Image (cartoon, rainbow, N blue to C red; front, side, top):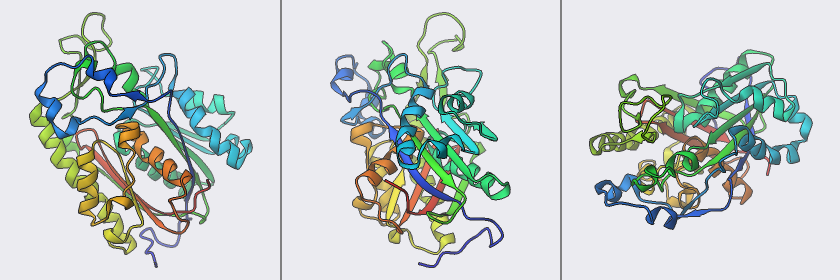
Length: 347
């Protein structure tokens, strides 16, 4: 295929040269939640139909622990020096261990890195891996930095969704925990062909974090914190998600000169089975070209894309030279992103 470079010939090419991931502990079966479940209308909603299994972080397992364990295969394949010499470090953590600071500096310390650029990002939500790819590529293209590590950590399933009141809710069995990382290099070995990121301010605030009372989450008192849903909001989020993921994905396809149905592999966030079916139908792709880790991992939020990529890569199902399209939407639809890569990652 011949690809159009929308950014022109003046900017250097950046490649996604490898991915790796980590899933904590043993799989947790759905029966853990069914013993606590209560009668709830929303349990029948397609948004909350449970995966067969998910993983939960241990109580004392931190986001930094998860990133370190996810990066271990990269060190095995590329050597420790490749990681310690990283110029750009970008992290996303679903549930920060320290509410006033990100985990980037501690990740750098743990991995023996001294990055010139270190950022913790939060607004990318389930599309954070694509968001971080865009940020890392921009830095590598416009500075003399040559390498970047991006890390997406989902760590709220165990701590939040197993709380004594929250585990009774319809949505409790859906999330899982995990971490996925990507290594980017300024070269043309596995080029990022195009990225599209869009912010939708009109949908900001439609997803709420509530303690089911007046208490702020940092104040003492009763009430367990969790993302709250109403049926009307679920309907809106479902409609937006159905539209946004194919919309940004097809925008990337259009710029690189391919049809959605010609994409070799389509990797998205993994919120539920119906989204997954609707998204590959929208691109006119058969299910086998849209990998699905939902039943093994649940909804991994931002880690869904890199964990699924790593799963497919280790299984040998991503052919070098093939076109891999990534796409996701975040929260209630306030952000969406897509990226196309000519695959060439190590495994």
